[in-house]
Structure formats: structure tokens, C-alpha cells
Length: 308
Image (cartoon, rainbow, N blue to C red; front, side, top):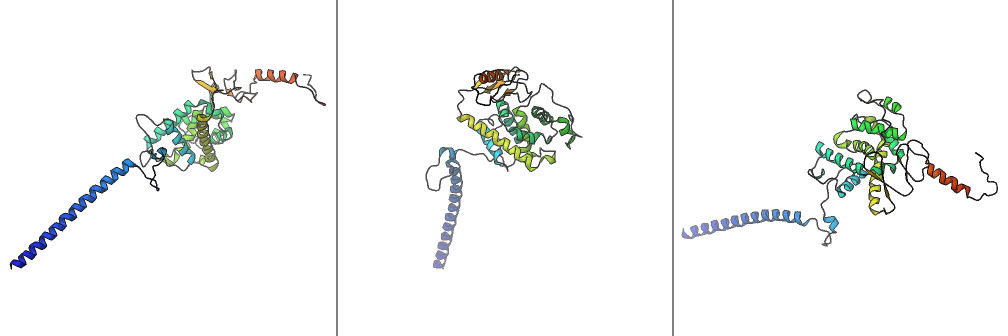
């Protein structure tokens, strides 16, 4: 009996030791897994070859999800330039975009557009015409007013656009024209771009007829223009650029050599333009210079001078 009791005691101690070892292993494994998780969070991803990654690659990247690569490029540009810094932080930290996140994006984009007043003259007039000439995507008051300013800027018939818009019945400013002293601005284009860009998240486009391929393609090209122009600005030589104060307000608009401001409507024109793109006013100084140059040009056989 003594042997049987000793055998059972030995078996019990062996099982107890096994349980303790197993329990210790589980604790160790759990602790190690938690420790590994923390270490991985601090260390960041490792390359396949075991070499340290480029410092740019170790920086945290925001999760920006959109069906348009051009939209993602704009968000990355704004983030790089610090437009998302501040009290509320980045809108891309969560899994889903809410109304507050959309407002942060809207604020950043509009601030960027206000800082880049000069962008409007470089953006494709054809694409702007396609976007605003098809009607307003929303009855939001600021979007509607921006559309009216841009249509006036491009010489588009406001009554024709409003009469064919399916939102005219609920729009308080239907058939109302922009004031004569209002001109198109970069921020007006941005409001339209925002309405289409945020639509997948918050359904901002109320006029569903505007959600066609032609308009979307134009919006994407305008997005690409904005990013390209702002990116190239960092690499370009701005030594020839000058600042000319506008008559209204205190904002200085960057100009390049040869560009001119129309004395009639105060619109900023390219150097190559002889007529103002807004009011068709003539650039008298350029005309005078052309006349002087023409007088000194040698006449070839068959050339003739107009008597008038």
C-alpha cells in the first residue's frame, strides 16, 4: 500500500508540475504577444531584406480612400502643406468619414483656394465651362453663388442654364444673375470640386443629372491641374514674379513678367493677351508697342500698309 500511495503521489506531483509549466507558458506567450505588438508599433514595418527603410517610408501615412486618384493627390498635398494641422487634426484617422471630417476637408480646401487666387487663370476654361455650364450640383447657397460668378466669368448665359436645371424649383436664386462687380475666383471652382469629391461620402450632389462621365472627368482634370500647378510652384523660379496690389482689398496677386491688369475691370490677364478675357477691353500699351514695332519692320515684296 505504501508503494501504491507513493506512486499516486508521484503522479499527482507530475501532473501539478505539468499544469504549472503550462500555465507559465500561457502567461509568457500572452505577455510576449503583447510585448511584440507594442514593439512592432514602435519599430514600424521592416523591409524584406532586413535593411532600414527610407525615413520617408517610416512616416505614418493617413488612410485616404477615394475612387479618384486625383482627389487623393490633393489631400496629400494639403496635408503636406499643413492645411490639416490645428485643433481638430487630420480627418483621415477613422475608418469612416463623418460630417465633421467632411467639414475639415472642406475648410482645408477652401483655405488653400483662398491662398491661391492666381490658380484660376491657369485652370482649364474648357473644364470649368463643362462643370458650371451644366447647372449647379447642389442648392447650397455658396455653391449656387459660385456657379453664377463662374458662368458670368466665362460668358455663359445664366438664364439658359437655370431654365434647364432640374433644381430650379427649389433654388432660391434661380435665374438671378451675378453682380457686375463679382468675378470668378479659385475658391468658386473649389466649391464645385468639393461638391463632387465629397459626394461618395456625404451625398452632396443633389442634381443627379450632373453625375455623368463628362462632368466627372472635367472635375478630375481640374483636381489634377490644382495639384500639378501647386507642386510645380515649389520647384519653379519665382524671381521674375512680381506682386501687384488689387484695387479691392489688400491681397497681392502674384504675376509674371508681361502679365497685365485690365484698368477697366481689374482682371488679371496673361502677357500674350491683347484683349481682356473678362470685358474685352484692349491693352492700349501693348497695342502702342505693336504699332511702334510695325513701323520699323522692313517691308518685303508684296507687303502693304493700311492707310487707316
